[in-house]
Image (cartoon, rainbow, N blue to C red; front, side, top):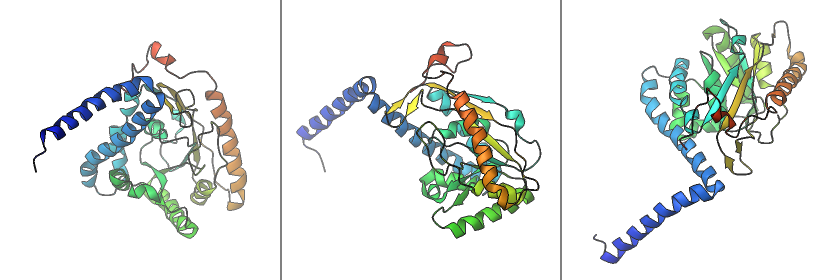
Length: 287
């Protein structure tokens, strides 16, 4: 059906108005810039997942596919002008399974995770991620372990299977023991599943702390600029000889050490783009 000339003119005017409004909102509205950056961040990850799926499908569901996802995601920090500094990577045990526990602030944790992710390591994620379109399928192909947190019995069963997988297949797992994203610049109390898993498998716990994003990212304030994040790998915590009765004290001890480091590396005043002026910065952000 042909459009009458007035309709074409209306569409053209709307298009020109959109071309004018988008740059105006970008430069004049920090909130609009925040929503645009987050929309692009999530959309770009979904697009990269589409590209990764055929490559990962060659192996099928395999933890080695996580290397492909990591390779495809590492560049995102450059798009946003975020410098990720890793310290303590030598603390990773070289040749044994272990459980990584890390603080959880936002979806931007993915940048720090990909920067430091050890070989044959997969995250434990909530089951809802499995239905997140192309990203869910790519994660499944990469061996990500999905848990239904609402069904405690199923979660316990899955964790028991994971404990066996750690030992028989030389796999490491990455867990966010806070259980949910925490935007308040601190750490929530830890859930104990990761610590029960480590004790059951008698493998070490490797704590990883990501510094606060408050200097460059704040969901409440709708602020997302360039900045710097430090990722600190702490010495492994052994679990040999521990029993389920020791788990509460173990979880509290690990959380205390992580919280101490979090406060230390989050109060050095870095971020907000100052590092771009220093040698070795990642350069101007593309977005």
